[in-house]
Length: 598
Image (cartoon, rainbow, N blue to C red):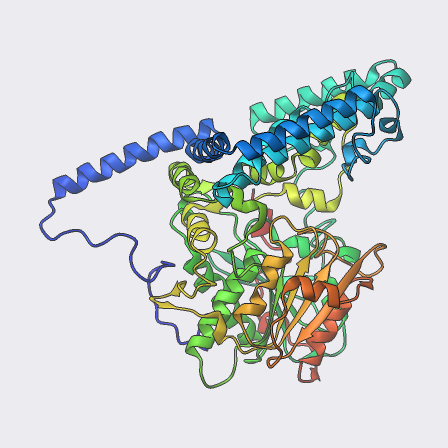
């Protein structure tokens, strides 16, 4: 990219090499033997990872031993647990109130759960869950990571034993059986057989499930008019047709995460952030990542930085006459944008700025507390995942989806099984569900580097992440930043997203919006029940911790989109006539080819 003086170099995210250079006297024979032994280890690890569903059996074993050995040496904890157990049994035998409702668990929303005998079953289960949570947490000496792993594993086991999962203990299922004469079980059996058929043929879910992932792209979703104006082996760049007679001079470039397809930001017209921006006078560009296969196994983070972000910025500036860009990144796309912005701040000390502002949607820059995803990230997990991905060359979307489902097992696994197999009711699809099922593959090197350098070692926040041999520092960022966190985000917890305040001194606006990692970002105006909090930090303001910020910022009803759009407009220079699409050169109509790849 002409505006960023970054020297060409290998796609390697670390400054020093991970292993020292081979000794000068090492023979070719020893190299061959060493490689053969490495491949043997990888084969064994890959087989074990496949048997364990993609995880590390060693990691779980180490966590369990850490917890069990420390628990065995904690008589005080034994006494507390025994007292708790006796109290719970006494409450059960005497008929005393054992719990206060269902604690917001949607599995027990039905009013019949408040009546005997289902109330007793629900309360016993609540006490059972609570007991095991207490047993697996607060044991002196257990490492925080091992405590999280053991507590998570215990939660998965207790979830399986919920009375809501048993047809003869679930009042909703019993009522459906009485009303339909047992037809719900026949419908559920048919649904189960259909799902087994899909698994056997390894196909995407068929239309009998309500949708085929990606089938509506370009017809129902991703229909904002535009053109593909650039394409390389990693990205397509889409420029959207302006919807106003004049536009703000600075264009907006959106960098989505490469984990799923870009069109979450361009769903149906009333849910499309892209359409909202173009209707409010912004020239919008979007990166569409290619869905890679085995041939991309050695494509890494710096390839996505150079041939993805930097190439897209260069093309946007070519089309718009060298204008600085409002860049916005979603999830890992925001992390990549932050790396690129920091690299530019390191290199470009003079001349025309490339970036006017930077916006991060639910994007972490400090991974010291990555939330529930941290359960799956440690040295052992990476060793097994490395071996598994080395064998196939990529991480499949289904493997990744399985990990996310475990994080919300009672919603995404057990409640679904009850609904579809016991009640016999197929879930009515939504466009967000269809997008979520439209998964992508991740290249071996890209995924391993992301987990190792960002999640495991936290190199970006700690100033060790390197772009072509030199580290980048977030403290070098001087441009205005707008950050969005969501209240119920288990992928990028908002307090983790907020940590950028402690890593920079530049002007920063922070929004905390209702919803989760996806629904909180798709917050179209007019949607009932939306709320957000917004605060501005000037470059001279002292740091405020997230809990103090939360207490000080009043909640506002509505969508945060207008707040961001006004922030962009206030930092744009003037309005001009819309630039021509692709400066006269176009390749295809939006949504392009890459988003349709399966």
